[in-house]
Image 1 (cartoon, rainbow, N blue to C red):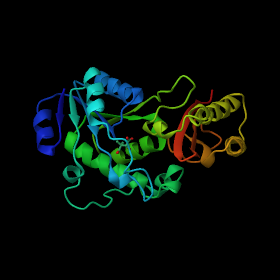
Image 2: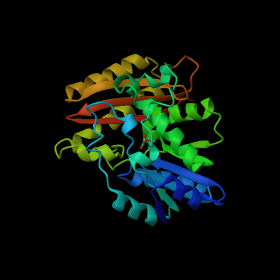
Image 3: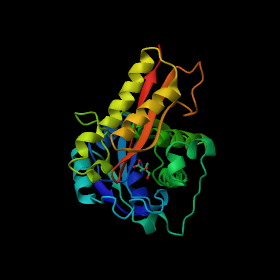
Image 4: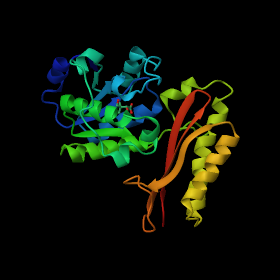
Length: 278
Ligand code: PAF
């Protein structure tokens, strides 16, 4: 496995590689990222992972400075997982000139759910992903369903710019108690970690109740949010949406997703669960 830091080295390393599968990351890798790489490897001849903590997608007061940077450990994991190439650029390499948003994803998607609480976040994600796509030129790119709204934004990006890239969603990897794996889980205190799995349990309860025939989605979301608040969470949102558009579901929508974002102490966690109605 090679590790390159510049766009020029990347271009040279990619020459003549056949079908390229790409997994963009911000590093601090865990089993969830490695499962995305495995998916990319299955779809491609040559696998590329990027490691870049993107300043453009962090708002003021968010965790850009303290986001864990663990390049050596990440590269060791990627080498073990048979990744072919790692692109780990410095900020000045990816943003050689002062960068504002290149892309404004549709407001109805980007300003809703997480976007309502993190203004500019999805424009920052879309901008860096467009730049990375431009450099890596992948045939397929894999994004985790854990960041469900991000996946929808990236699918929209490929449509908006007519990018010939197949976007594949990878399943969320979970700890034994159901907590979705996330680099931010390590911010949780020892007393918070066992409580954190409640988020996944609330989503599973919503999914079960819907599978049992309940269709009052706002009430289900409201009840779950209330239980989380009673347990000491600060809830940004709990919602049930149409899986493809993330709009409020209509009566005919069969593919749904329930999503939540909430803070336990200082740690903001997100999670979601897909629901297919029979
Ligand atoms: O999901 C992430 O880690 C990031 O948002 C991404 C897609 C690598 C863009 O910085």
